Image (cartoon, rainbow, N blue to C red; front, side):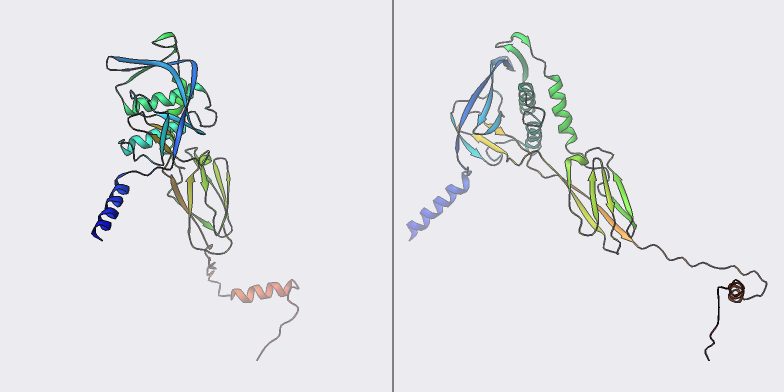
Length: 300
């Protein structure tokens, strides 16, 4: 019995201390002829024709600059657990990869290497990168400054939420409201369905028709949307360079509140003229003279 307990305990510890991965995949190399990287760390220069990495149907980036790729088969991990990167660095790299080659309108070799350079420099700030048409700094220098600027612009804007987030909007029963997003990011967000009111998103505006009956105030959720539902995957094997198929893993949400209210009842006060004539009698006499009252029934 003791022997069985020891075996079960050993296996449990083994499972606990070893990260679980789903499967194994083969790395596919696609050379980008006419584009060479020149990577300098300290006094050491590494240069070669750029490789566009594919892991099955996913596009991958190198995340360990200066580390060689010496494996053909890689284990697949569903998270960053096989790396020692900080949380801030992971989130930054996810955004760079998301807005890199696979982002709509960015499907060019220049966007791929622009994202790769930003990832390398984030991991190793001391690295120097030059892109040329031939290895070892040969040929012409390739300028990807425009692509890097565009990726960084999108990365920096990613944390923006609609300008009306956190606010409360209340108007009278059945009225209509138009809310504008001054941050110009509403197009990137899905709007949760209201249980009480009609909400339509049109460009940078929300058009809201409030319920004609009094209801409780309602929180509306705004959720950042993405161009696909592919997961983040990290590839690792032994001492070989780790690679990553990048997607953003943290949901970004915001909210605002809408409500309706009844219009206030106003009492109209008739000023006292001091004449001493009963206003009701005066109005009655006027209506009678105009023929608008044809008879009076007196009830005893």
